[in-house]
Length: 307
Image 1 (tube, rainbow, N blue to C red):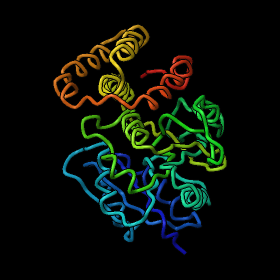
Image 2 (cartoon, helix red, strand yellow):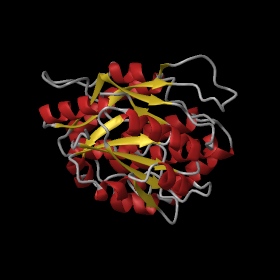
Image 3 (tube, rainbow, N blue to C red):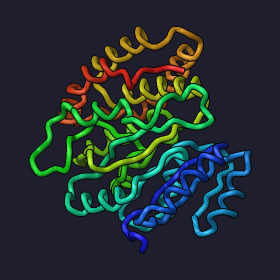
Image 4 (cartoon, rainbow, N blue to C red):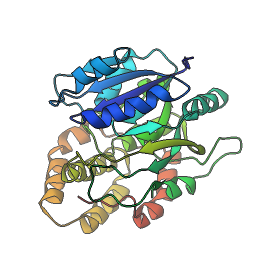
């Protein structure tokens, strides 16, 4: 049986083998969800391999790499009320998608539920050591300092991790999806804030599980550069100017002092004209919540910019 409530959206770029591994897991879970794969202009035969191995999957082949915006395009194709995101190196635990849908059915004020993440060593990564373990970000999600009203399915979050989140399709679309400016790298923060500004709750649910086998086929320096740039853009777009100035100063003092960080700040500054045009500070109640997260973000070992 296919659970008619959920569509899984997987974005990929030049990671054919990792994607096929993920699709194999998704094909075996009891929910048998509809799956849409968005190929961000891979050059390694990804699209051909998906058509050959999984002909029933909906495949969107893009003419250029749009990053997270590929999820927006897939969301337009989906007809289910809920969307579950995957990266090409992550997958959902059996029963967790149905559990997430049940929770969203039961809690109409909750826009998204984020699962516990279990990390696995990749066989092609010589730096990978040990066995499976809980991702270091999980304790921060589990111990979120944001107030959680009674009756919600788990702690309220200020943001989410796309590859471990199931979201309401109508909430996602009404908030505009992922920004085409950000491409990829911390792209969730802006969308999460805009959902909260519309009155939605984001929750962490410990009994749901997503798996992640980090692919070694990635450019960690590019991801760091984009992550720093996107953090700056989000801060300048949505936070009050005094807070934005403090966070910018803190980032400048704590990121690695190298050319990648310098390029990130330069790219962010080049985007100032559109940032100022599109700046829309968050409502006071949402801003108060983000302030509560500041200390845990500064202390976090899982949020360090590296690579």
